[in-house]
Length: 186
View 1 (cartoon, rainbow, N blue to C red):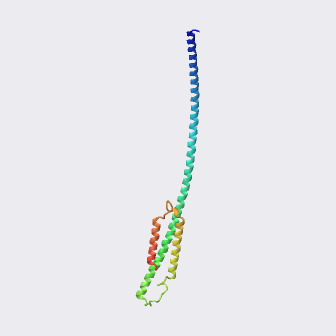
View 2 (cartoon, rainbow, N blue to C red; view 1 turned 180 degrees about the vertical axis):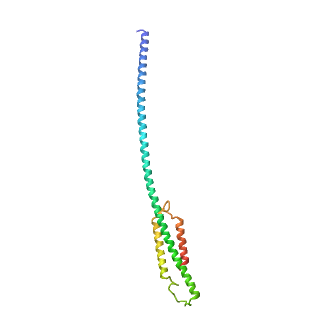
View 3 (cartoon, rainbow, N blue to C red; view 1 turned 60 degrees about the vertical axis):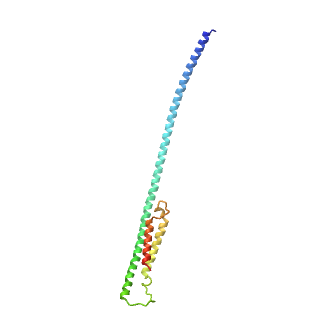
């Protein structure tokens, strides 16, 4: 074996190994490219399916929340309307008691000016104490205010965001009514 045959043998082997390596590399690259494309397609399909699943779940939840809040809003409107009715009853009862008190004051003033004199110890029904209709008016007012407070206390969550503090307008109205009653009633 001379050196030419060694070189030729080495060159042939190298060429053959290089060609086999090139073909193997090309085959592996093509196989991986196909697998990568298949993996990409599967990943895109899975991603699309997950997004659609999430979208449909979110839409269902949004509809459910809309139904829940819609019904809560409707219930709140009903409760507010009923509260307004009860507050109107309180207002009417206060006006009845105040008008009775006003008529009583007019009657007492007229009797003092033009009526017979009375003894200091004499108590006349309807003057120094409440008449039957005035007592009934006060009893009715007491029941209406009690009913209002019970209704408001039971359903106060519908009137404020946290349900912890009543709106100032309701308390202000009741305080004013109570103040008017305390000034006009004996």
